[in-house]
Length: 270
Length: 215
Image (cartoon, rainbow over all chains, first blue to last red; front, top):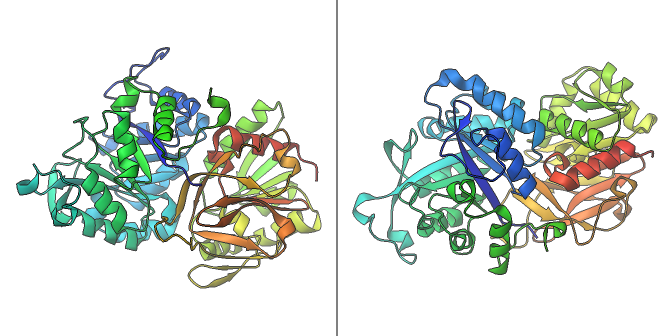
């Protein structure tokens, strides 16, 4: 049986992890490679690097980080942030990324997704969708009213509204050849009150490709909800892992107890 | 020992090479890993790895576009019967044909067809992406020393799957709305639909087994 994936996400700026991490025994909390190694050993199912470097000039630093991570991590690595050209995708894949997440470029030029998927295969093209509840309804949080709710997608790290409907956009991306959707609720991001489940489910049920739920995890129950109620194939979180609130192992044990199929290698179980 | 990872413009070659280096190091084997498209390097290899991601026809075209590569692969894997590992589309290419955006000829080394995954449950996502359990139909020397029960997990990402003509060629399946070919083997050839280079300890163990294997 296919397992729900647990994905820690590292925000990387100029080659360093920001929104620091507080692990015991961590020599350098800012080193993405060391964190990647820890998560690999802990049994994370995948890892995600989001490059939030403002300038495109520092691209070499990111490629170096990806290359050094690929040296020591034997799990899938997704890298996103500032991917604009086929050359950007190629460079990241050559450095050792397994998947590349595209956000702004997918909105500006949807054909870019078709071209990238054709060149490198759908399996490595992830479209990062940053969605926000339509203003008037932002206070409503009901699961059953999902089809009346509208979410708008934003680009440039959530700064630029696009007027585009998130569900239509996700469908279009899947048609163009995206292999996966990384869906972030901008309303929930950083709130620690859980995923926007109506959004997650609306998108997951609308597209044939896997959806990674992101934005808002504060408890392990939220991780369960993302899969069970949001229909996500994978759940992504940052701070609950980095600040040592929960380990990957605890997360998986909790989800498993809640009936979510997760990967637990038996030798790790006690 | 010289391991050549065949570079024909497809795949996460660096990941594959790194995994081989690590597996060799962990098992104390002296291994040179070379990523190359040169048929001369293929001929000089002791072990050959054919990765592959993306579309079947594209991969096949990629190989055919490099003069002498197809022949060098055939000589290595069939005429000289040296240890060969195909990963993902690299495995699928060993089949007779692949039906993905048209019908394409495979190498015809292991009888079978590659066609789109159509899980019985329409709610299952395509691609089949993530960690799935391996159900072994039989043992194989490259798996020696690996714990196969309870079923280990391996990382998959694919939308097309191979069905083998001869069931003896099947080593393992994964359940995704029905059994999906996960690992095949015949004589000196093995193939994995999953990515051993991305399958943490189990994957590295399988790679080490491949390096030690004397078919």
